[in-house]
Image (cartoon, rainbow, N blue to C red; front, side, top):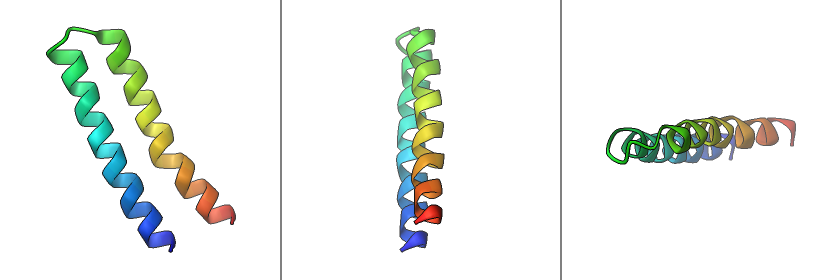
Length: 54
């Protein structure tokens, strides 16, 4: 189960980072791109920590 959580977290992280790069480069929206990167990091780390504690 822990392995599945890691794989899904990495998948969501990569998709979110891709959208952040799109916002930053194509839309010239630097603030939104930065916020999305921070949220992507939480999306990567959060589920792993919760799964490890449980």
